[in-house]
Image: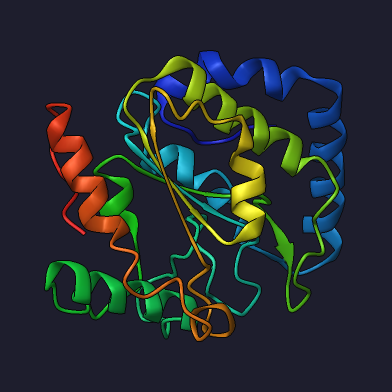
Length: 221
């Protein structure tokens, strides 16, 4: 399976790509992409690893599934392509950044500008059938992304992990909180946010304060 990823990921991920579970996943994806409408486009499946190198990664935000609407998913968790209406969760993310840091809400929901600064926008499942949320869960992606999270935790220092909602927090159980900053809150989806625990979490200022305390540049959110 040929994928486009930043070069510094290659030695870490090659054992995963060679593993039997990933070979089965790759065969499943070949079938799906040839017979179904699947998002994101094949060339963007590993966009999170292409736009944010292993060496540069200093913040990890965990999502669950790619968006399953037409033209939305671009391979980065919570992000949408330029010109696509911002989904409700992303609207709430930008509202919290505005409240936390005083930054205006951007016109585009494309988060590639975060990824290029070292923000790893990682979904637990990297593909999905059009209009069918969760349709590619349990096919091997979760094993792969669990390995990625543990890899970052084990091999790097002073990374900020943002775990929004119970699913992300359970998935982040392997993170070593002694050498990284782990931030937890409710999910930014409207249903979760309305019950409190998302707005006012100040994750974005906390992340920047921590990075700067470790001699690392802050993120331009």
